[in-house]
Image (cartoon, rainbow over all chains, first blue to last red; front, side, top):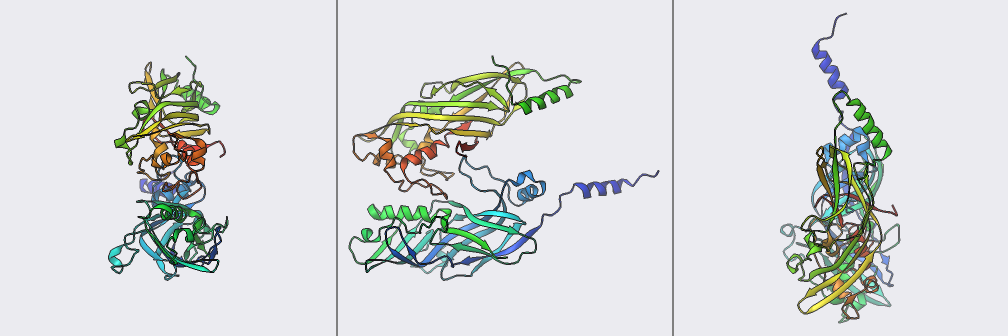
Amino acid sequence: MSRPFPSLWLCLLLSACAPKEPPRVSLPLEVDAAGIVPMSTDLGYEVELMELRISVEDFEFTIAGDVHETSLMGWAGELLIPSAWGHPGHYQGGDVTGELMGHFDLDWIAEDGRSLGDATLIVGTYSAANFTFARADASKLEMDDPFGGHTALLAGVARRDGDSIAFRFVIDSPEDRSLVGAPFEVELEETDTAPLRLRFETVDPIEGDTLFDGIDFAAIDEDADGQIEISPEATGLELDAYNLLRRTLQSHDHYRVEHEA
Amino acid sequence: MSKPQRSPSPRLLGLVTCLGALTTGCAGEGTLEVYVYGEEFIEEGIPAEEMSDGWAISFERFVVEVGEVSVDGFDVPDAGPFDLTEASEGQGQLYGSVSVPAESLGDGAYEIRSVDVAGTATMGGTTKHFAWVIDEPTHYEHCETTTKVPEDGRAEFEITVHADHFFYDSLVSSDPQLVFQGLADADTDADGEITKAELEAAGIGALDPGSENDVDNLWAWLVAQSRTLGHVDGEGHCETHDHEH
């Protein structure tokens, strides 16, 4: 019996062992303001958010379960983004198998529908999205824009008992502070083309908490002029409100990534 | 000295491996010694220059109850508890030892069942005393370590306790600051003793609980930080879970 050429053996070997390109999709990630709605807080304020600007960078999308147990997805996940060993108890979510890198200064309400670029994701069942809080690039903003150099700016009106208080919070997140675990419960297929929508929700759809729960606007407005401006340099009651809002803003309760196939 | 007590599956695997290696001979045995060490931060205190807000910490006691210690499936009999403030000249305190095959062992695991910590924090002329018992167990597993056991020799596996985590200003930062001021401010009756009740009544202020945002008072903060105290061989990390998960 004749024996195949060595090159044929090599070809057969390579075709059997070489990893196949994992199926993946490229989908635009768009800003979505549909979840920014007026809210009734636990302290009885009716709050309307008129400006929401947040500086973020480097989106990651995590797949449900442990993909290291499945050869193809495990290989694909490692190929796309190497696994990180988080500090004990500090890492949440599954393996990262999708991403959109870059720096984005988001004006959530004014730029509803803005495309941030195309995210690349390996086909699979996703569970969560992550990103990192950043600081707005002042060189690309008006010179007196209070958002410049900061992580977030939130402005609006809070009303209670016939009184209105206009507010503006400027927030700074710690350097490289990541938001981990924003819901992204989607099964992606290779044929999907619909955009991913990055949604901010002023009311937590699970627990019903609002973005401004716990903040007593009237107590902060000590001179009762109907205006409050709170910055990272706040002290006293203003600092308490600043810290509370910062914690809420940095939690995953008010972010979601949607995909309508 | 205890015989190796590996879990059934690894033992069977080891037997198969050993039988398979009969033609070349089985590896010999060595001794694995396990230590518990709180480093200089517990034995000597945390100096003010290590803290971001000028407080200095010293511990009167730092008693940990540790159990379920295993390395690569070899169980080490329970021992202790250990007061990690006792000087050990950098060695830590001997927890126990077992005979194991002379090979590289990984996959360390253990449980910290409770932490009983008391001490003082001082800054300028102000001193605050604290005595807290956190008895919510945390299990550490798949620890990042490889212990190479020489034939007829000894190797060490160290359970390292990082006391400074109690004073981290973040549950998620890779570069947290060490602070005590928030805990000091919780002493609302100004009697110099920071009690559990006072901590439960105090908000976490500027501390960062992370994306979960499910820590809403300073006692819960300390409990959450207690789940990050355990390491191996200095800075090696482990996966952790409490017994509710």
